[in-house]
Length: 131
Image (cartoon, rainbow, N blue to C red; front, side):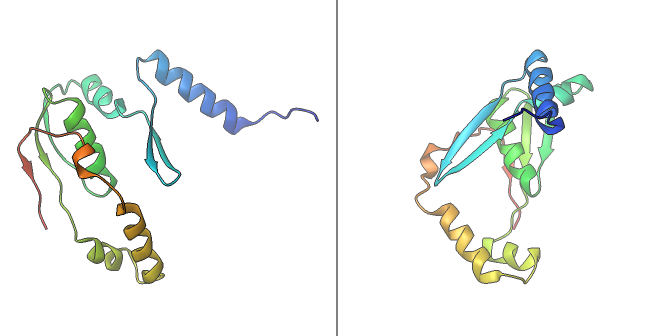
């Protein structure tokens, strides 16, 4: 079988090569149940440092809450305070949209099943959570 040139594969290789040369580390976390998250978790901090920001307070919404939590755990000396506005999970389903509500509830319950909160890294910064 002949090999084909894939622009997507080349772009992915180029990004991996560029990020690694910049000193970033690729991280993959297995969340169980076949869920694996891949990220370059230090990208945001490097971007902030490139703009001259070395200490900060941060607020994350939506996926940014997870990024902010991860940054606070990794860079305790650089993150002074954390803000994470939150919704109740059932409210979040209704805010997203009203289609497939039953399926979304089942998905959230499956994601949270068998999670051990004591395995999460602890953050020491003052944290504001709003409901």
